[in-house]
Length: 238
Image 1 (spheres, rainbow, N blue to C red):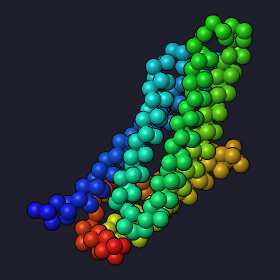
Image 2: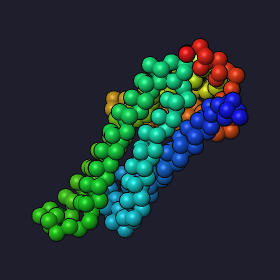
Image 3: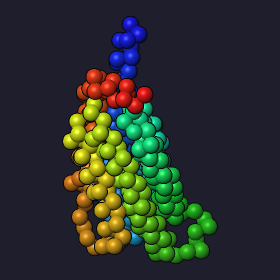
């Protein structure tokens, strides 16, 4: 019975990691893409402010979704560390560190959304400013939030490279997934720096290079790991 439990353990760890990854990633499309597309009108501060004021709860749900997602990714990185540390412990630590750097950047960046929300709230102390000034400031904070996302996105990408390397070298998860994860790293980093250096370039690199994460999550959930190869890797690292 003990051997049976130990044999199931890596698959259980893989599926836990996959489930956590899936749950942590679910709020992202809603919070980062859907809500901004519904509420933010590019170049129109007044329309944007009116949209946020009229859909305050939706806006708050988006903020909460981002925060919950980032907390989730802390546990994702720890679960993946347990799964992949036998491949190379130092690289696994690097993977966790890069993820943990991105988490506080992303969470603190949500303060800009709270600032925009406060500006359109109609608080009494804001009467010192004209309506146009309030709306312009709110849009400014939302634009700063977008730049903050691009900064955080550097680390969303960087942690994928050691993850991809570990998957590629593991032998118990298909190598192609490791390659796709490393390509995903390049996509995120290119996306960030293109926003800084070429702000008028409207190309979403991550949209084309981010499929490795989805493939990884699905593999962990459906197949887990190759037990024989996992055992070989564990014995080799002992």
